[in-house]
Length: 501
Image 1: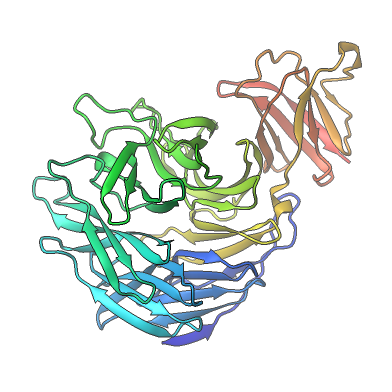
Image 2 (image 1 turned 120 degrees about the horizontal axis):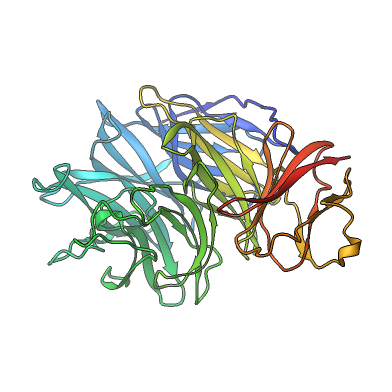
């Protein structure tokens, strides 16, 4: 085991209204898998550094230290899940494989104390007939025990690619002893129980049924909610809404929700869902970001979609619970046609599914989001990683304040026609800007966007309410010239320029 204190790099950004923040570059041989943030804003993260498993502790000022754990000679250790224990220690799971990330391998379990010393460790092999564990992983504390969801690979000659992945559920004590294990196989094959995809697995402890909910992908990538009792018996299963099957049934050609993240504002009726939703028309192939409320049977009962011309949105990096009314949502944006480069973006969303603000990291081209954490002062920390297939890319951790998201109030009201002074007024504007939308007869699905003189976005929100004047609070914008647009999915409905004094 070794510890090294690495350097903090500070960066100045060019986004409008940037408040204090920092950026830490971990290194070019580091990757983060998962973690959590403490009340003092210290982040506890696991992943790898070179061939070593790595634990990163990032402090509230951006300084950090890393503790590494060696792999067997000629192997690579990637730490994948991190769960705090009641005694102040940590339950860590990972994967040992040959020095290639796409290899299957053994399951590594470690119990660490608060100083990151190894209290107990063990290596688990896959069941007979399987090749090894893959990189899908999720863990949670279930009433004092640790539940771990993994995927394991086995050969299947008649299957596309020559193998398939199946989900595996484990239960451990907090001291690392194994209590139960179940491979999620069905006979005859159940399309839900094929946990084939390895991304975005999630475990939820349902307080209303004392069951475990696994959110994962089944056959053909169909996203599902699986309900298990304490002994891992499957008690219920649901497809997540908006499934479009070909006539032949589930398959790789279906267009449906992908990369789902769920769990916040969880109550007896619904939970928050973030995902990307591809068009059911296969030829369109244009995913957009979906933020919605989903009931416990996988039906989306309320939604808002982020779908801009010539832009592809993918739900990457998940959500961060800011408070009882707002969350941060991370996504990855492409130009249409799957073209590179792409860049990460974080949205600030309220419980009414309204977008209050966003930060687009245009300076971080070819970086994708890994995870996002809330800070105690209402801001967030964003972990991103460069995407380069031939070298290990940089891992960055960036802190933003809430002001960086420039949450701009927006409302619609009815004003007597004679009181409307211009298409946009006052101009210059100091605190509020009024936009005449008398000619916009249907506001459903309409949005207001404001960009600065360089074309950088300051706000992009839905227009809600009824009336003929849209009022936007602009006191948080810097002085300068801005462009506004009121638009829907089909076209621009109103637009122009104004001056912020």
